[in-house]
Amino acid sequence: MHMNKVGISVLVLAAVVLAGGVSAGERQGPRISVKDARFDFGMVSQGTQAEHIFEIKNTGDELLEITQIQPT
Image 1 (cartoon, rainbow, N blue to C red):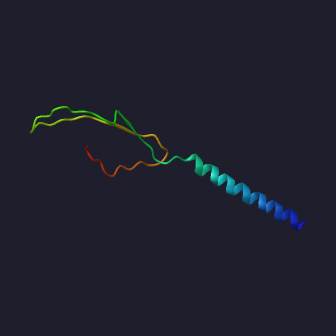
Image 2: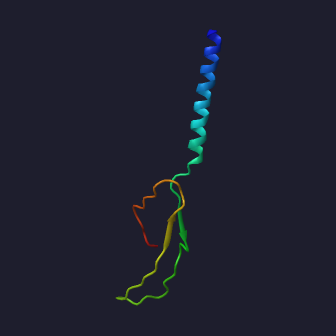
């Protein structure tokens, strides 16, 4: 009888560990998707403003936090 309880406990523990591993593997975290990530403004005269709208989307399943953007 004691062996059955130990065997069942081991099976339950293994199922919990495996289920936790599967759900963690399914999460992909934040993932950034940028439509047309590059844009050439061409020649811009000094003192004028140039503007372009970049479409940025979080295609992941967790919060995407953008903390810094640098022009190149």
